[in-house]
Structure formats: C-alpha cells, structure tokens
Length: 108
Image (tube, rainbow, N blue to C red; front, side, top):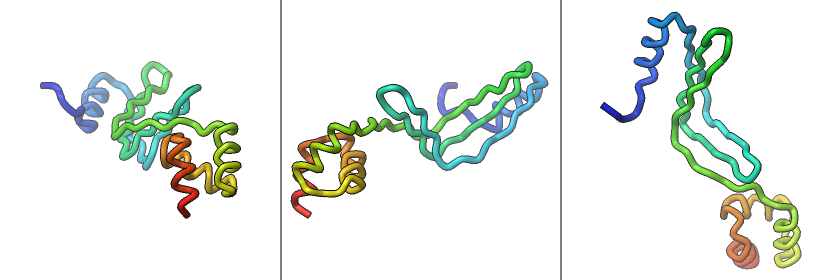
C-alpha cells in the first residue's frame, strides 16, 4: 500500500526499534540550494535519533522559487523607476519573469 506516510505510524515503528522520535511543529521549510529554493509548506517533520545522529524526515506541499539576481533587480529598477524592495517583491512573486515584472510595475 503506497501513499502518504502516516507520521504516527512511522513514529510507532521507530519506537519499536528503540529509536527516539519526535514531531517538530513548523509552518514552513526552506531548503536553499545554489540555484533555487525548495519551499515545503504545511510540513510534517519527524526527527529521529539513530545511533547518535539526528535524521529529519520532511513531507508536505513542495514548490520552488529562484533567487533574484542583483543584475535583474537593477534592470527592472532602471526600466520602471521603482524602488528596490518593490522590484524584488515583484520578481519573487513572478518567479523572475523580467518582462512581466516590468510590464506590471509600469502599469501601477
């Protein structure tokens, strides 16, 4: 039977194997890599102590975002006359779509 793992069942199985397990409450998990951010919303996080090592199991709703480059920010600022914070927020919202960011910011 495949499907979404049941955290409580995993916790019970790990306890039977004498592994310390605890659930960690969280609202959001962000994994930053070199070229993107992996965002896990509504996460279920289990922390297990396995022979002195902490092992995290994370499940939830996954999405990605890409960091905004400084060159892109400057370009959009030059084209729209908007301040840096406004430009960064818009680029993040549009996943770095420069043309759309410029168009939307010019309309405001």
